[in-house]
Amino acid sequence: MDSSSALPLYNILHAMSIRKFFIFIFFILPKGNIFGQNPLPIPSLINGPEYNLTLQNGILEFFPGMPTSTMGANGDILGPTLLLKAGETVTMNVQNNLGEPSTIHWHGMHVPAANDGGPHTVIESGTTWSPKFEVLDKAGTYWYHPHLHMKTAEQVTKGLAGFIIIQDNEESALALPRTYGVDDIPLVIQSRAFDLNKQFIATTALDNTILVNGAIDPFVEVPAQVIRLRILNGSTERVYRIGLEDDHPFSLIGTDGGLLQSPVELTRLNLAPGERIEILIDLAGLENSSLFLKSYASELPSGTYGAVNPSIMPMGSIQGYSSNVLNGQDFEILKLDIIQANNNAVLQIPMTLVDDQPLVTSQANITRSLTFQAAQMNMNTMLNGPFVINGSSFNLQTINYSIPIDNVEIWELTNMTAIAHPFHIHDVQFYILDINGVPPPEYLAGRKDVVLVPPGNGIVRFITQFSDFSDPDVPYMYHCHMLSHEDAGMMGQFLVTGGVTSIQREQNYQVQLFPNPATDHLTVFLPNNDHNQWTLTNALGQVLEQPSFQLIDNNTVQINLRGLHSGTYWLEITTERGHPLTKKCFQVLSNELIK
Ligand code: C2O
Ligand code: CU
Ligand code: CU
Image 1: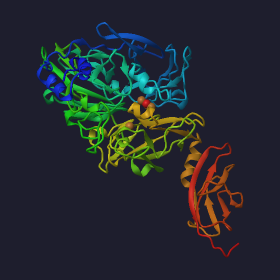
Image 2 (image 1 turned 180 degrees about the vertical axis):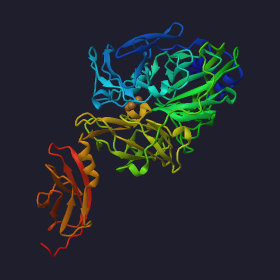
Image 3 (image 1 turned 120 degrees about the vertical axis):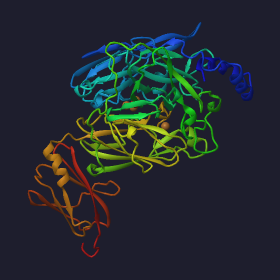
Image 4 (image 1 turned 30 degrees about the horizontal axis):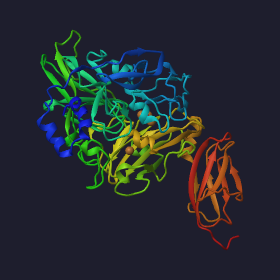
């Protein structure tokens, strides 16, 4: 379906029944043959170590004579691509000239919480925010976008987003296409809704126009050799089923957090909001022809935004969804016009890429369970929200988790709603352990920061480690990357706490409690127990004043449990300065006769 011809139809839709509308598009309009009218804009590339971004309002004419208000960084829409080198220390100067507050978040990057640009780090209009951090990430495709609480969808929809390309030695050693804009091309795919005055509408199911790098119906000239596309789904809600015309194969080389161990040859791949892929396409011998990059949305399963039915249930709908011509229909995204190969052509897809060892289950210290539900469960809200995580909506003042630094954790995500949600977490990259109990396919086995959690009690488990940065005050976010869901409260936050020395961290794993369950005494073994603080709490979190701690020797402490009721208790050990060392649970079986 050609989206430029689809647009005016939105106006016509008001004057026509749905049935007449479909007859109209199938029989009157030309199909496919006018796609590819506009040259694909390639965002400018800027180098560090100092990067200047000015957030500004703009105006663009997507439709002749009908100016649309936009937002961009250093321009009317989107922003420059930031080229970063691993190991460098960079400074980002973000000047906000929007006339309203904003934030800028470095999606996918591992930076201290105070530099992460979440909703707590507001850049007031007329001010500049200048975080400085070391690039610790692997070579890959990341991005930046605003993250102001309840305003994210609006500011991203208006155009604020940009690419971050990170390079490192491992990637540079590979024979991969990397001539920016020539054989290495960034593509941000964004579906947009326009109102009758051709202004963007932020949260709606009328997103029937596809923009690629800010252009409608784009084409790009590419050489007849191996090319690399870095594709970002920057849409608010829509999932794409990426493929090439005629099932032309492509090789997936990277996902959210960098390169895979080896390329995976595919003809289709689902891409949810926030996700990135890097693919190689071999175009040798195809000069003077063209090839479409498409979304095969007719193949998306029910319960996915973009499928025929966005719900897994037969009933219930999203307002405006079924009249949107993109839903459940295959459509073109970009026309590749293939020209002559150039002089430094990459002619082969490498056999192997980088060494990357996923974390394994046995390394985990804890499993956390997060359940997605509608705030109230009924046919309509299970599809439209507002959605909550573990029963609560996002609150800027509430810290949902405190995570000890260096913890290796399994997060188990259960989606009890009728629609798939792309879950995203800041600070870390993770490895998917399983989706509905099944280990991930090869193309989802690499480093990820977004995962689409299937609807109808779908369960995804991932494993990650929270290393390097702790901050007692500034949290990191986790949320649904459907920005309408995020803004409506489907988000939470965690602190990474501690910052203990490696010696103390080792002790954490050596703490032993016995016997467990205990009756009158609990013995705690903790090597080098100098200057630590001990707290006992009951299951309600109340601190117990009574128990006496008796030092047996430098490594052993005995706690008198007499007088405690049967139940679960927690022993928390912190350092002198209050950094958590360990929190352990034990059972008391009280012998009521001993008092
Ligand atoms: Cu791309 Cu918290 O976001
Ligand atoms: Cu992020
Ligand atoms: Cu969601």
